[in-house]
Length: 321
Length: 248
Ligand SMILES: Nc1ncnc2c1ncn2[C@@H]1O[C@H](COP(=O)(O)OP(=O)(O)OP(=O)(O)O)[C@@H](O)[C@H]1O
Ligand SMILES: [Mg+2]
Image 1 (cartoon, rainbow over the protein chains, first blue to last red):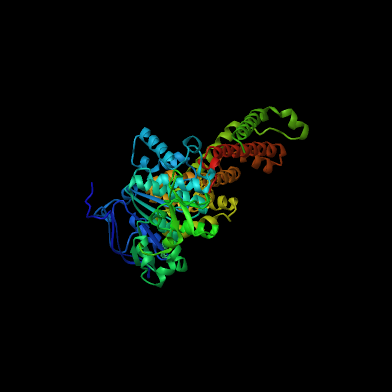
Image 2 (cartoon, rainbow over the protein chains, first blue to last red):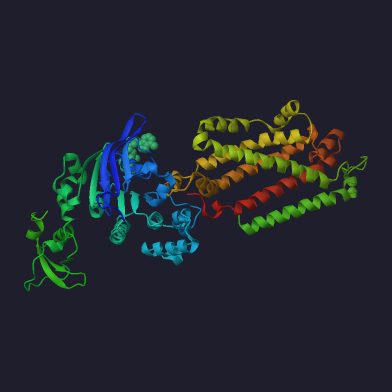
């Protein structure tokens, strides 16, 4: 087991120059075990470069990168990459390999016995909601975008790496598929407790997934912290506008569950369709209020039992931010 | 084209070729009807079977050597350590194609002399070009994301080459070899002018002696051989990894 003082991934004064251009400039970042760290920033600010330096697809020019306390330069690059899961937006699945062969790639590189690989591949396909019967023998060209992304994530997880690097893995998907994959990732992360560095352009995705958000601009880290802290105290107008500008209030509301603001039922009778779940966010609740033109909503638990009431006054008060 | 149809085609042309080399020597009567005054109407200086064997051996040898060299060169200049030579090789491959094959043979005589070996060397040189060109096109045409993933998953450079790059470019490389061999089947016939024993012999003899029957006999066998080899390549193409899935 690892030492709890050592971050799983540590970047210390890391710089990357392409010729004269400085793509990443003196970045210091520590990602702890089990943490999901999301890099955000405008296009070209160095997110992908940062990610790809961690598995040595790009060699850093200066500074130090450590994984579990060891310099990444002390590893053979291929060995290092087999220990680190990597998923990219375009999936990069091998078009001439079946889905199951694609997923089993890294275990095969690690020379696992064939039956163990087969078992692991089925396990992953089940985990990512890909029916093995249907998908095992399909080729990437026969998959939808969402299915291909799942296969890409399954391949990244195949050898059970502690560290996972994901570069806009859900970038090219429609909002619904995207959300379901995000939910699955959160669900998986709840069980697997990987250390994940995740790049995205989508601020809602970042707020939803992140334990910690790192805001980058022109190769620098401008601010990092918990999603709620960033929303409450953006360091400057850049961070503020990146986080959503005038949407900041709603973004913040999306982080607060209804359960935190509801009050007890006092025998009031509210219409059935004016209800939300206690796990829904305040943002959802406010949207329902706007839509239904009402000040109060019934709150139910997952089993559908009424457990409380949400007043709009409680919803918009900003104390427990 | 389906595997079944290309099998059928290969078998058909194979049978026709076999039939041609075996039957032509016995068609005296037929060719007599056409050229009643000629001294001889069947080319008999060498048997068609042995000419075909020789021709095939020369083309195969040249094809194998050209494939090894051409694919090897294409791979080398697309590696990290060989990329300095990429522009040079790419340019040679495209300029070389504009040379007519006859000129290649004509130029090889002063340099290499007469006979089978100079013919093979000339064929190798000429056959290299389409193979190099297609190998480069195939390897460079692979999706960058696929290569990025292959590297990111921790495949070594050799594993990437064997398991990703070559399979994904195999159809284009094969097309290059097919072009090269097809051209060389024709070019090898011209090789008989510089002293190699090939199916070009009856053609040349026919032209020199004004004997149309010789020309026809040689031409038929060469054409059937070309069709045979072409369908063989088509059949091989069906077995490639990129055949089913297509490139993304
Ligand atoms: N291989 C390379 N050679 C030269 N410059 C590069 C290379 N890779 C990236 N850069 C430059 O580094 C900078 C950062 O690129 P990077 O890909 O990290 O941006 P990003 O934050 O991931 O952007 P996006 O959100 O558009 O993906 C860019 O200015 C880019 O042009
Ligand atoms: Mg990027």
